[in-house]
Image (cartoon, rainbow, N blue to C red; front, side, top):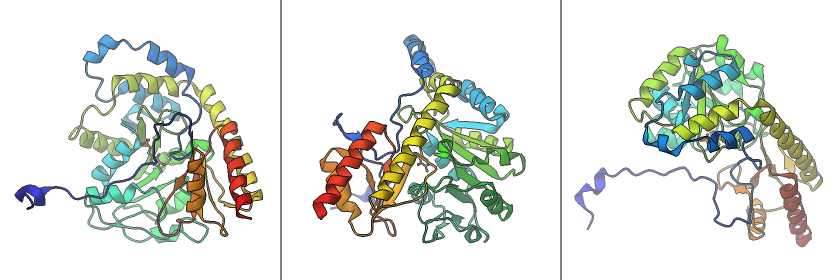
Length: 355
Ligand SMILES: *Cc1c(COP(=O)(O)O)cnc(C)c1O
C-alpha cells in the first residue's frame, strides 16, 4: 500500500551526466573534461592551503576569486558572480531571471540540463528547432518570450556563432534577459563579454571545468551588469550563502592569474581537434565545424550506437545521446594526441571489421 506522504514527494526526471568509470585505464572522452592538468599555480595554491583554516567559513562572496575574474575580463567586481560550477550559476540564474509567464526559449538541440531546470522551477519553455546543419536560426528568437538561453559554441554540436549573430538576438530581445552560456568559448569562439557595455539585459556564463582543467573543483561565473549580479547574489543568499569553498576560491584565483599556461593548453587542444577532425572526415564521417574541445560526428552508413558500444568495449568512452535528431551522432571530447590516436586506430578497426 502506498504511504499517505507519497503524494508529497517530488517526481522529477533528472539530468544524466556522462558516465564516470572506476577503471583508471580507460580513455575518457565523454564529459568534455580537459586531458591536461590545471596550472602549476593551482598545484602551488593547493600546497599552501592550511588545513586548520578549514574550520572557518569561506568568504561568502568569494571576493578574491571575483576580483581576479573581474580583472581578467576588464569589468568591475560588482559585475561578477561565482558559483559551484556553472550548473549552479545557471540554475540560480533560472530562478533569478526567468519568472515570466511567457515561455523561455532555447534550441531543441542544446545542453540537456536546460529543460531539467525548467521542470524543477516550473518555468514554461519552447525549443525552436536548429536547422538541418544544426545551426540556431536567429529569427526563431524574435517572438515574445520570458527569456533566452543558448550556449556559444552550442553543445553538443560545437558550432559557434559570431558577434553579429549575438547582437541580432539581443537587438530583438530588449525586454528579456538573454543568457549566453560560454562553457566552451575559450577554445576559439567569439565571447560576448564586450557586448556587456551595450546591453544591460545580457548575462555571460563561463566555467573553469573545461578550458581551465578544473571540473573536479566546481567553479563557474556569471558576468553581467551590476543590477543582474545583485539579483543573483540575493537569490544565492536566499538559498545557500557558501556555494564556493575556501580551497576553490584560492585555486580558482591562482588559475585565472596564470594566463600563459591557460593559453598554451588551449592551443594544444585546438590543434589536436583540427587534426582529428580532418582524420574523421577522411574516414567518411561528417564532422561539424567545432569551436569547442569536442567534435560532433556522424556517418550515415553506420550505427553511432554500435560504434559507441564497440569503443566502450575497448575502454574508450565517448558520448552517445539517445535523443531525437541526434541519435545517430557521437560527441567526442578532445583528449591528448596519444589518446586520440588510439581512438582513431580503434575506429578504423571497427570500420574495417564491417567490410
Ligand atoms: C559543461 C557545461 C556546463 C556546466 O559545467 P560546470 O562543470 O557545471 O561548470 C554548462 N553548460 C554547458 C553547455 C556545458 O557543456
